[in-house]
Image 1 (tube, rainbow, N blue to C red):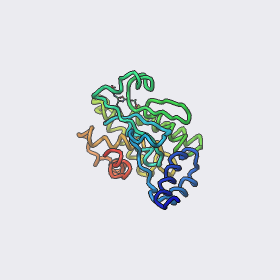
Image 2: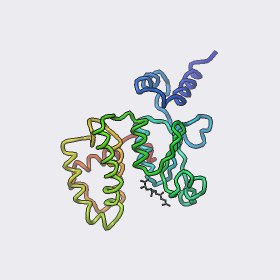
Image 3: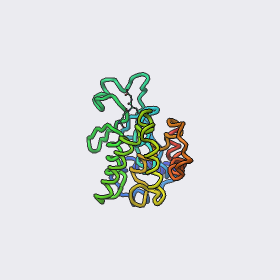
Image 4: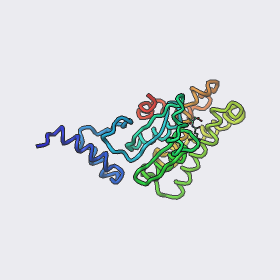
Length: 236
Ligand SMILES: N[C@@H](CCC(=O)N[C@@H](CS)C(=O)NCC(=O)O)C(=O)O
């Protein structure tokens, strides 16, 4: 006879195993029937549960973006933290996954794909697991914002010469954009918001001279990200 507690543990295991095949409604129905509805992030030592998605990350790496995205969208995954100081990301086994020896990377057993570049990983997650809009116009806009985050916003935060030249102008435009909108694409939070806001959250740390009071809408987005429960959990 299976007790209630065991039943719920079993139910959760079934959910973990089948998550990728469920549609969102089924998923939410199953979750509300489970006494532990919030799925915990599994770490590398949880060998008993078979995971489909394996994210290779490391402290202070751009794995923040896919981690935050998966936390927001309740996508379960297996996190493998590599020690960059110990050069684990340059070892032959990892170079088979990302020959450039950079983090993050994602391996998806269910499709057999192995991906590097945080933006490509984010897009893959959005299209295969995030249940985001299938509308081609919105998808193109999401690609645009992810490319903007990695190729334009990131150097304006992290690279001194680019920061001096471009940062204020970028903030002016973003601030204007956020005056009428809360989300970058459509009416809900997408991979575009994840990419841009994950970088904005670095501004107070890495661009210390920047006074966000000049851009109140950007400041609001940045503070909302820093106070977001999922973001805080993955950064802790
Ligand atoms: N454009 C790449 C950047 C990847 C990257 O440079 N990752 C850093 C951590 S944030 C890294 O792996 N650095 C270690 C190294 O270059 O040896 C992405 O967005 O994934």
